[in-house]
Image (cartoon, rainbow, N blue to C red):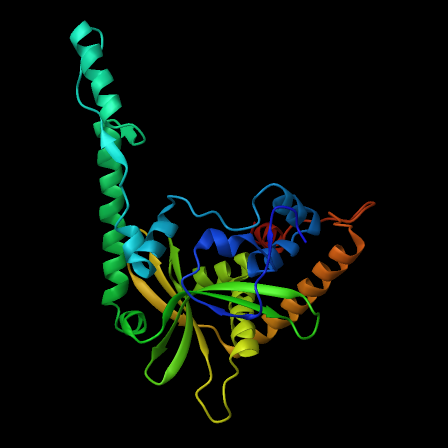
Length: 298
């Protein structure tokens, strides 16, 4: 068990679990698995320095996630913030007025008017991105369909015996098809750009991890529509174009091979207590392929 984390609950599908509680569960998620693609040493450092879960901050992507999937939480955006009045604190009267203002607003975040304007600009942008995604026919249908948001899973991987967890953005429907989906923001939602993002960030491993957990806990009956995985992508600059991509079978097969490789690595590290970094000794290196192509063009 990793220090500072709680034992995961019994295998099952959990709704309405606060993110911080989910994050404390001692189980392997897709963030850990994709981290192992770099080195176990990096993952271990994250585990022991509080960075095992992806950060949930005021970054634009997270705010869009909230606006789309947790509207009640997004409605709280800006709560606890108060704009500082224009007070000349160099005078006695000004100092007294400022002291009263601080006492009346104890525990709240005090910002200058210019900073509040920035906060409001972020809110308006997030709302525009959310509205663009909801206006997309397929994305809107999925988001309004019967289903559930922020679904937490715990299961034991059958092949390795590793306790796994996942937190799925949403399980919904497109027509008769159950669709497991992830809301992604991107500067460029075009096919080629997002294909590179899938590979670079291991989004396919994340998708297969979600599908594997659901299949372990709630197998699809014979003859029933199988679960599909889609990315619901929306660009972060105007005109905030949305696009929906379904991950194909070849990508999911590749992802499962990687997922099992990473799970075996995790188990070996836990059992041995060793979390290796990059290879020891001397490794031969060269230029990337595109560099040679540039030379040929010259």
